[in-house]
Amino acid sequence: MTDTQWPRYEVFKQDLPGQPHKAVGSVHAPDAEMALLNARDVFARRPQVVSMWVAPASAVFSLTAEELAANPEFWQGTAVSPQPYALFAKRSQRRSMTFVEYAGEVVAESAQLAIKQALEDGRFQPETAIVWWAVPLSAISGSDPQDVDSYYAPATAKTYRQQSYYGFVSPTRKSVKREP
Amino acid sequence: MNEDPAKLAAFEARIARGEKIEPGDWMPAEYRRQLIRMISQHAHSEIVGMLPEGTWIPHAPNLRRKMVLMAKVQDEAGHGQYLYHAAETLGITREEMIDALLSGKAKYSSIFNYPTLSWPDVAWIGWLVDGAAIKNQTMLAQCSYGPYSRAMVRICAEETFHYKQGKEMIVQYMTQGTPRQKALVQDGLNRWWWPTLMMFGPHDSDSPNSAVLMRWGIKTKSNDALRQEFINEEVPEVLALGLTIPDPDLRFNAETGNWEIGPIDWDEFWRVVKGNGPMNAERLAARQKAHEDGRWVREAVAAYAKRTPEIGD
Image (cartoon, rainbow over all chains, first blue to last red; front, side, top):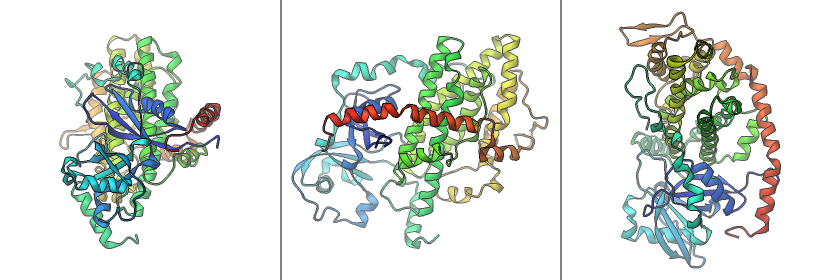
């Protein structure tokens, strides 16, 4: 037990107010509070972050388009009891740092039924979704808005972490080609 | 391969269409195996890669260089975490991977089994080692497996700062430095040049995994192609600073537009890969010590977590 790597928490990062929280990866932590701290260290070394959510990976139900096609009745027999779910979707095959992003909330009797609702509701633009995630709201812990300055703002002052901080670095080329 | 031909054909068609394979999607067992092998080795390389540079943090020549180096080493730790998490989506646990590293079973990039003997070695690691890594990682950002690709896009964006800060230092020492500083820079180049070229891996003719990795969109360029791109980009830059590249056979082929190099010492490469490089034992011992020294922190955090019910309980 003392040497365990702890449960995995999925991390969602919001870069600017008004933008959706996006899944960036995961951290290991013994509880949600430590997960938020680890998420800050791993995913917020650079600007811009205004909020983070974490949820135990075990609480995330994931459904890919391939899984949906193979089993269109995936929601059969899953109903338990109604609770609110956050829904997340991946909508593009383009190269990206982030995976699924927040799409809205529904009340459903299971994660599967939450996705079924989204598939039938134009507000969720189901035709563009490649991967769905459903997470019970009760499993999501968010950063405290009061912590934003102390947690995330210091990264914005560390400009030497940015490649743009280093101007002329090439003796033969005018500027080094920017990596994607 | 004993895969279902219909599933395999559908999988390869998805890759041909440029779709990303995501956790939950069907994939051949060999695709999963190769990815776990590559991503975990890559994660270990980031973690061990903190050691050669971290040792210079207390000896940085000024506060600016110290802050930059600390930020860079911290990034490497983060990169290791991104990659462990990407590998975990394939069904291996971080614990298994870390056990493999600490027991000496796992491989990591051989370059980190060379010592950093003077401060300019930190600069050469930034320019050459991170430069070579970026070549490989920029390619892997196109990888067909979603989680690996996303980790690589994030890493490339951060790694470019590592490359630039290293190159900035070399340019500064060679244009404004004292004769002693210039001599240390040349000495560093003499030691880091060949091991950097070995980072791209064996020649294509000796790289048994390459064909299947390219077929499934994990790699999109061969070892030799990437190595040649790197050489062509960096040789003129290094020479422009008045440095000597330690390769008497190095020459520019005007017909092909390539800089051609002499033979790589593959005996040395395999010796280091097999654990007999100058620093293999020390790197492993340092990781084991770090893991043991951190035990009380893990215990304290676990005890704290027990105080309060967990989310989701």
